[in-house]
Structures are given as structure tokens and as C-alpha cells.
Image (tube, rainbow, N blue to C red; front, side, top):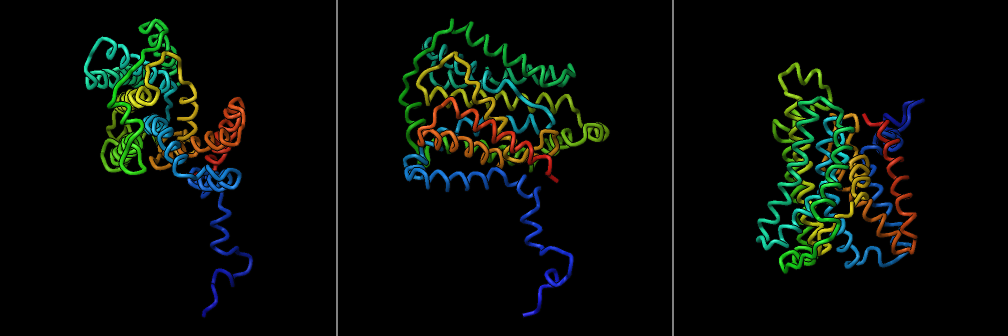
Length: 326
């Protein structure tokens, strides 16, 4: 066997070793690698972690976060952020519940929830794109407005939603894979195609990578900003339907943990917070990792008060790794 020329050259590390010690590689694969490590560690500490029942429960729990994270990815890909996703989801759920209480057919309730999310996202996108106001400020305001509207229109009271269809959606599936999981994966697949196989996706990444160059080539930054926040809002409306199906009610209480976790999943997935660099598979893996982390800590009997600390630590670590992305 001929000697390895890389190994034989003095003063140079072996190619494989150099690749393993390349921090940028770990930055790109933080979510998948972290998910594997997490699964191994929690399984060793509690043998029920990877049981079929628990895995199915984790996937169902992760479905909502996957949908929100995909929407967040579009906003972050342009160099922005959507701080209103959780509040928009809550508002969509309240619209769903009120329509259901009025006797509206289930398809109409679903359409109204989607429309509510789309409306919030579209308004924010227009303000960001046309008004040229920082998306952080706009979506922070959107967070407050959507939360307030949810409380006002519901009078602060939850609405019970009893629907056999929604019950089947949240508890049944094809084999071991739940319907909500299939729906979330379908959303991720469509988002991947839209972001990486269409002209629109190319414009989104170009707008985030170099706004000046994108403008010079004729790309309308205002239209792109409007579109990505509309997509994020629409997917928040879809998440609202999944939330109602899972809880069996529309509750006006804000689900703010979804905001932190959606941003965390995107960062863990290797999406650049500066824009221009994105992936869909990464945030999906990030959402699974965060759901698995919470589930594993619960199985170990760790107080729920410590769980946000663990999530926050993971986010900071992931943000640190993004500094080394190519």
C-alpha cells in the first residue's frame, strides 16, 4: 500500500484530523451532532428515553416548533428576526376558538386561523419593507399587539374545542408517525423547495447576504421582506391549528417559550443571524434537539424551572459556534 502523501508531509496535520478539528464543521453540524449526543446520554440515564412511545410523544411535541422554526428561518435568512411568532400563533388559536364557538365549520375555523396569522405577518412585512423600520422593533411591537388582541377578543377566557378530527390529527398517524409530524415534515419539505429551488428563494438569500448587491440586480427588498414575514405569519397560523388540536382548547395565555425555542432552533440549525445563509433541515434538527432536551430533563425529574436555563445555555453555545461558520 502506498504511503499517504498527507501523512508523510512534515509539519502538516493529517487531512482527516484537520477536518475533525475544524470548528466551522461543528458549527454547521451542531444540531444533528447535538441530537445524537443528547439521545445517547439521556438513554444511558433513563432507558425509556428512546422507547417507541416516548419518541412518538417527542415528535408530536416537536411538530409545532418545527413549523414555527421554518417560518422563523425565512425571516432570519434576510438578516431579520420575527419576535411575534408565538403571539401570532396564540392570536390565530383564539380566532380559531371563537369561530368554533360561533358554530363555524371546522374548515372555516382553520382558514380563519391561517388568515389571522397571515394578516399579522403581512402587516409586519409591509411596515418593515415599505416603512424601512428595523424588524426587531416592528416584530417586538407585533408581539405585544397580537398578545393584546388575543386577550381582548377572548376576554381572557379559553375556549374548549371538542373535535373528533382534531383529536385524530393530534393522536393518530401512519404507523408510528403522527399526522402532525407528517404535516410538519411536509411544511419543511415545501420550504426547502421554495428556498433552494425557486427564484424567490434565491432572492431571499441574496437580500440577506448583500442587500446592496441584491438591489443593484433589480431585487425588491421591500417585496422580499413583506413576503418572508407573511410566510412566517402564515406558518404561525398553521401552528395555531396544531396547538388547538393538541391542547383541545384555544387559550389566550402567551406561549412565549415557543419564541425562544424557534430562534434557538434556527441558530442551532446553522442559519446565519446576519442573513444570506440558511437551511431547512438544520432548524428541523434544532427543534428536535430542543424538544428532546426538555423531554429528557423531565424524565430525569429535573424541575421545569431549570429547563429554560438549559435551553438558554444551548442557544449561547450555538451562537458562539456561528462565529466560525464559513
